[in-house]
Image (cartoon, rainbow, N blue to C red; front, side, top):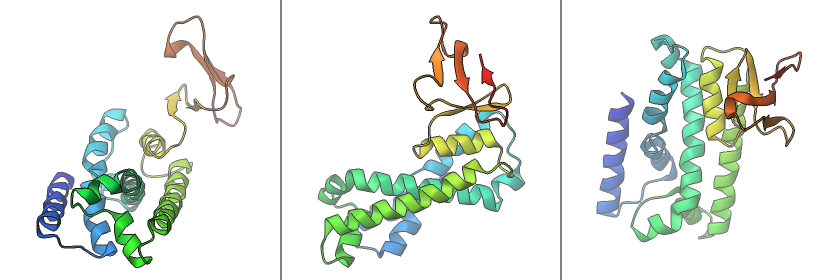
Length: 193
């Protein structure tokens, strides 16, 4: 399903480019979110993480919201990084679309896109950080990591945050990641070795 949606979205984007048609921002986002390909690519990775993702979870509201906010962040971050090149190639991008609404101000459009990314990132991280949920925490952790959250690894029943500071995670004796000592977020704050 997601692969078919991706191909349809890419076809619409190609039609826009070839015809020179400029969509509304709302129409752009309906097409641009699936075309960033986070859904199909990420789903493959999530199935390999380990916890089973039953069909009812994948079709459920929580999973849909996790993917929606991941898509919004990914698409708009990509648009911020590529709008000049894409504009020169005749491709549609949210930054120039919003600039048209803002009297041609690219700076105002960039601020609006960054604000939308931040709002969606916060919603995503709230979903990722919840203690309970239909989507297993390792799967949610991958989504959080994609949006600038410190890398998180499940080990020994706890969550290792690899960016708690210099002393929070260090490699001992050059034995590789398996020998790392890290603080986790379990209530007792125990250290894993």
